[in-house]
Length: 201
Image (cartoon, rainbow, N blue to C red; front, side):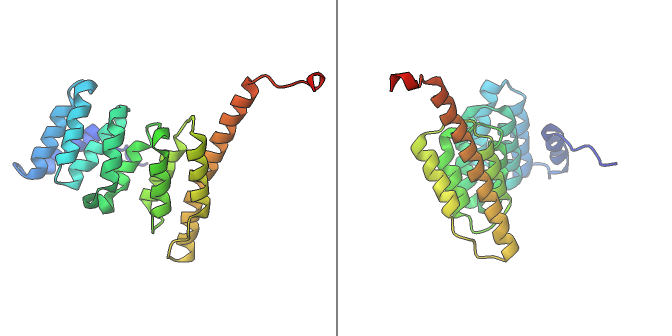
């Protein structure tokens, strides 16, 4: 029987106990604990500030997870910025998974470009695909068509055939979702408009 997965709060308490007292990590984890005990309106801005100032990836991971759980749209841009920050290069997915809990339709270009520019079919690309799959629209016609074209035309990554296929799978899945959602959007708009009858021709 598998063990129950710890919640973010439980994992935070566990990490606090294990962190060396008065270390940078310990101080940052305490700051997170203090912030998340406040109402969301105050907690989210404080967590965003902590994310920008954090020194350890452990801290950033917790902050990103709590921001994702908040479902507060103020967290979207800070998470996007963190996902592409040079110092987080090997930890992109920690900031992309929380974004899959939001409707990031307005940021479609970022997610498409991220997937197209990746040179590895890794967890970050997968998380990016989930963020696209969570988009509900409505989509800007020009942007969504451009995004679909980019995903379909993306060059194969330089890797083993299985990894290339995995990257293709991630990108095609994202393109398929966008095509389906945009088709439904167009269909709804079409059926809302009165159409000419044969008698009127």
